[in-house]
Image (cartoon, rainbow, N blue to C red):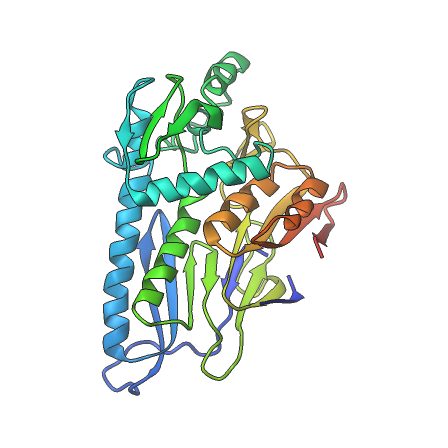
Length: 336
């Protein structure tokens, strides 16, 4: 269930979260937090015992570390990094986590007409948003065209036993537009296996919520203004969710400036250049967070009407775009 009250990037609004202590009640709300995937994670368990929360946190860490070791481009030993070093035709058999993330990526690529493309790794590196973040020079047209030669989901192959290969030497994967969302889904699945059903999982603003809280209330998420200085009080809208994922994307936090121009981290696969659009933030709600994550990224690239039309597909519930006009005024458009 999704109920929109008012709406951007994500901030969880909770009234007085209760942290673990030696004198806590037998069953209560627990907040588990830490750092992973270059960002934070926060998991709120609505009604569990301390021992359950401790066991859940151990499992959450294990799940997230496993996924990070599979998909991080910043870890030279990760599966993605090892695949990026393969030569055309060489097979690398990968984990079920990576297989499922790639399967979701193929679907997102098809749904968005190529606007979501995790084979942009070489182009992302060229603009300095990959492992070497010290690169901040504007690449020339020949460099961009060369890197684009390896871009395209038709250049990677996933066989029936989970082995991955590529056809072009410049093809490199970067799953930053889907890995966090997959991590959210994986944590949600692990909690359900432990018998915990009322929860909120938040990894760097990608969110999934389980069933309602014990008092029958929905989980409430506030969405902040899409500008770099936005604080906890700069909220534009709120949503109330139940058994649903929500992800937002925007360039207002990860970018650099050169000669008075801002260059953001979201790359248009058709040009190999950072997106330049009136859309400054996109939010998607979906049945899975990996799909919401990928589609929110793609919505920043797509034409607004096409992005809003994604709700015609199964498992996609809402697309909300925030746009800015020539005077700097913000407006919100939703698919409903």
